[in-house]
Each structure stands twice: as structure tokens, then as C-alpha cells.
Amino acid sequence: MDFIVVGASGAGAFAALLLARAGHQVLVLERDHLEPATDVEAAAAVAFRPMAPQIVQPHIVMARCRELLRTRLPNVYRALLEAGVAEAPIANLMPSSLTDQTARPGDERLTLLMTRRSTVDWVLQRALRTEPGIILRYGVRVLGLLATSENPPRVTGVRTDQGDVSASMVVDTTGRRSAIDGWLAEIGAGPSATWRAECGVAYYSRHYRLRPVVDLPGPPTTRLVAGLDEFLVGIWGADNGVMQLAVGPLATDHRFRAVKDPRVFEAVMRTVPTYSAWLEVLDPISGVFPMGAVHNALRRLVVADAPVALGLHAIGDAVCTTNPTFGRGLSLALWGAADLVDVVASHGEDLATQALALDARVVAHVAPYYEDQAVTDSARLAALRHAIYGTPVSEPSPSRSDRVTYAELRTAAWFDPTAFRAFWKVMGMIGLPDAVYADPDVVAATRAALHRYGNAPMVQPTRVQLLAALTS
Ligand SMILES: Cc1cc2nc3c(=O)[nH]c(=O)nc-3n(C[C@H](O)[C@H](O)[C@H](O)COP(=O)(O)OP(=O)(O)OC[C@H]3O[C@@H](n4cnc5c(N)ncnc54)[C@H](O)[C@@H]3O)c2cc1C
Image 1 (cartoon, rainbow, N blue to C red):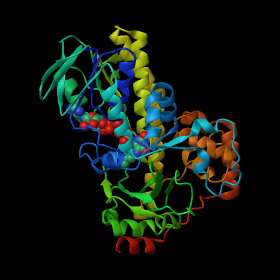
Image 2: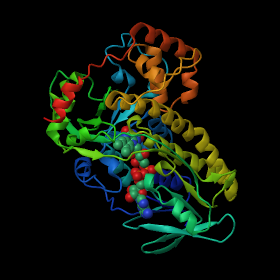
Image 3: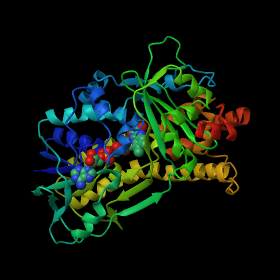
Image 4: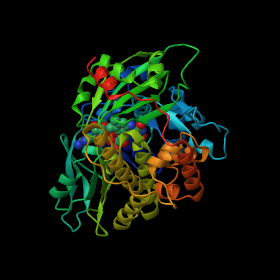
């Protein structure tokens, strides 16, 4: 066997499909039973998995992932559309406060896909089962690595709860709870280099179906997420007339625990007129799904310029998780899979060079988003804690004339067409954050919009209204 891919969720499926198409024999080992249901609705009904609880949370496919699907996995892209996934041009995301809504060159590249995550996984599992070159085994749990005792160790396969399996290469796609550091320690390798930054949010979300009404408050393929003073609230269009709503408080804000109750969930949603209007045209099709303990994290398997092991790679959440509100996980997973396949093609049997080359891709394609997220979340968490608990905030650094911050850009995007595109370039991972924030046109447009308009035009509840909803 050329490759063992551990995990068959987003990153594992992307990696296996791309590796198989590059001519490799791939064995995919997945702990859970992910046999695809008969259709996407049946898939949604059984999607919850305790070890991958994010699957039922609101998801969309950002621009980078869509672009890579179209170029690297076109049949998967077609299958997603056939399954009811909707393309959402960025015109669908324009708020009414953005008065200039004319199209601009480059807009097409910023298009998103609106879908439930369970629909993506349904399409991916079906693709895995029919792809020549892939052997797919569900219900197999990987327990560790097989390796030589060289320095660094050369990985030669995996230990599973059903016996040992050998392969030339192993790819860890086991997600944010990856046990890779324990596995490395067992084979005598040093640990990976890891960074963590607080993300701090919890998620309470619910799925709804649109009623067949004429007057909707906006396009059904919209994504409108608002960071209010005391919590976050959002609506995400999805496939087949489904919309996903979520309330995202601070994970430590126990006032919001009651939001697990669907009545409280809707009462909180109704405190914000924009979302209240949507509730009038939606019927619930699920309970409320809570999820906490999300982190920003980055892992590299090259430490001090040396790979910790040879014949071992990792991609997806095993390498990087970022604030889920930004919806970057699938883009990072597919970009990582594409980088993996390209690096393997370029460096063949030279495993050390392969590891260094993939790490360079992590530095170029992943780390900038992790670092930007860490800074953005730190500022947002400080503002939330100040509003909720009265925690002192440090003086904001004076605005720089040569660059903007994420928060400034997000506010300006409500009003200015240049800032709006720049915001979606960063969100969609089409532009690197630093390059976009320092673009002179973006800086000028953002400064002018902030000067003219000030704050985002989102009406939000008073403390009294919020507490009334939380105790309703
Ligand atoms: C609340 C929330 C909202 C999100 N919204 C978005 C969004 O809008 N857009 C977006 O792109 N991303 C979003 N994400 C991120 C996205 O869900 C993840 O980035 C993505 O699921 C990562 O895929 P993965 O394959 O790396 O890991 P996972 O999806 O966690 O999959 C890991 C797989 O490995 C298997 N596994 C684990 N251990 C073993 C083992 N020992 N042996 C065998 N198999 C094993 C698991 O069963 C699982 O199937 C969101 C995340 C959260 C938490």
C-alpha cells in the first residue's frame, strides 16, 4: 500500500481522492461507520457524531475550497451541485447598507457554496467508494504508528484495533483531537511544534427549512453573521431550502446555557430584528445542537528545520483549527490535501525533502490565517468580556495609516464596495490577510467608510431584553 489515510472526514476524503487520482494506492481507515445514507435528508438526520460534533453545526464552503473543488475535484463539485448545494455569488451577501451593489471584475472568484456539512460528507463518502485506487474501511480505529528506530523514525504503517497495517506513507487526518503527539512519543520521535490561541466561543445552532413564501427577508443563500456586544448571531443558507441559525456566546458565559432549549434559542434570535424576520419564514427541522471547546491551534511536523518523523504527514484540523465562525476548515483541509499531493509528486522518494516542502506550504498557506485569527479573536474576546463582565480593556492601538485591522475592514464592508470585496477575499482565503489589510486602495476605502458611517448598522438587544429572552 502506498498511503494510509487515517480518518475519512473532510481532510481524509480530499487527500484520499487526490492521492488516488495521482496514481497512488490508498487505504482509508475510519473509526466511525460513515456508510452514506440513501439521500441527503437521511444523511442529515443521522449526521451527529460524538467525536466529530461539528458536522451538525452551520457550515458553508468558502471561496478557496470552492475554487479547489472546481479545479482539483471537478466531479465532486458537480456531485455537490446535483445534491442540492447552492452557489452563492457574493451579490447575495451584500447588505442593504451597501448602496453600490454593481458587479466588479473578480467577483466570480469570491463565490461561496451553501450547504449543510452532512451533505458535503454524503457526497464525499460516495466519491470515496467509487474511486479506483481507494480501499475504504470503516469501524477501524488507529491506535499508533509502526516505525523503524532510526533518528528521526521512519514511519512504516499503523497499529489498529484490528491489527497492524503497513504502508509507505501515513497521513493523519484525524481532526482537532489528533493523538499524533502521543503516537510520535511511542515511536521515539520528538513532539510536533504546536501553538494555541483562545477562540472562546460556544455554538448553539439549529436547522430550519424555508417555507414556500414569496417575500423573503433576503436571498436564501445568504450568510449573515453579526458580532453583537454580548454574543454572536448568524444565519447561513444551506442546500435544499435549509437554513442554519446559530447563537455564539462566550463559552464561559453561563447565562446562555438555557439556549439549548429551542424556545429560548428562538427568543434570543428574536431580539435581533434581522433574524426575527427570518424566523417568520422558517420551520425548525432539528433540535438545538450545542458545541463548546473550540480553539485556534496550529501544528507543524517540522521542528527546528528537521522533520519529527519521515513518511508521516498531517493535514486538516490535525494541523490547524481556527474560529469556526470564519468557516475556513474545509478550505484549509482541501488546500492541505492539494499541497500534499503536489509535494509528493515533486519530491517522490525523498521523504525528508517532502516533509520540509509540505511544512513550507503550511507556513505559506495555513499559518497566516491562524495568526490573523489569533489576533482578531483576542481583540473580540476582550471586547465581549468588557461588555459582559466589565473587564478593563487596554487602550486600542492608534489606527495605522498604512494598514487596517480585520475589525475595521468588517465594519467598512457594510458600506463600501472595495472594503466589501477585500473582506470576502480574507474570509474566502483568496487573499492573505496581511496583503489585503495593507493594500492602499483597501486602506483608503476603509478609512473613508469608517469616518463617514462609524459602526455596523445592526440593531441589537439591550441587556434587559437579552436577559428576558434568556429566561423566557
Ligand atoms: C462549530 C463549527 C462550525 C464550522 N463551520 C465551518 C464552515 O462553515 N466551513 C468550513 O469550511 N469549516 C467549518 N468548520 C471546520 C470544519 O468542520 C473542520 O475544519 C473539518 O471538519 C475538519 O475536517 P478533518 O477531516 O480535518 O477533521 P474531522 O472532521 O474532525 O474528521 C476526523 C475524522 O477522523 C476520524 N478519526 C479520529 N481518530 C481516529 C482514529 N484514531 N482512527 C481512525 N479514524 C479516526 C474521525 O472519526 C473523523 O471522521 C466548523 C467547525 C466547527 C467546530
